[in-house]
Amino acid sequence: MSGNNQQGRIFFFIVFALLALLTFFVVEPFLAAIMLALITVVLLRPLYVWLDNRRRLKGRTGLVTTLTVLLFLIVLIVPLVLISIALFNQVVDFLEEITSQEIQTSMTELAAAVEDALQQFPPLSEIEVSEEDLVQFLQNASKAALTWLTGLPMRHQLVLLIILRQRKSPT
Image (cartoon, rainbow, N blue to C red):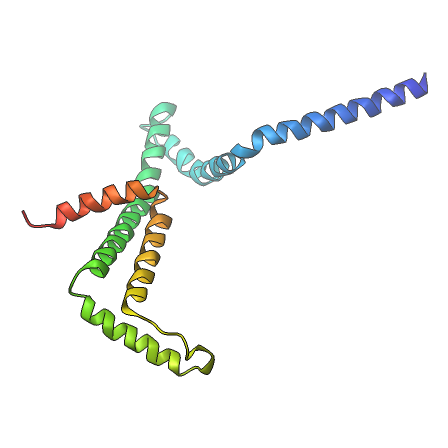
């Protein structure tokens, strides 16, 4: 009987380990969201308790929860959104400046300066930098920065660029 009991325990632990592994695979895509939720709860719990202890809000958990979420949005999320919008606008302005005619003369000077700087280093002295290559590099770097900032596909970025250009152009 003892051997049968031992086999039952081994079978139980194998099934338990297999189910734990399968559960992990199901939950794994959500672990980042779960961790972010836990961090948010830990950070906002003192604010919630403080609001709940106020005389006018005592026992009104729905109102306290709403106020906690609103304060969180105002204090943390709004500045992040404003900073992201400012960064996005700067990248768009940079893209527009690169493609404008005003910068063409300074691009020629910049290409010459880069080529002169490369001449200072013997291994790099054979590299030639043309104005077109420099403009192309800056455009690609700007598009990469825009993609990184927004996380949007390129067609969405083009729509945003068109909208922003129409907003800035005098009518």
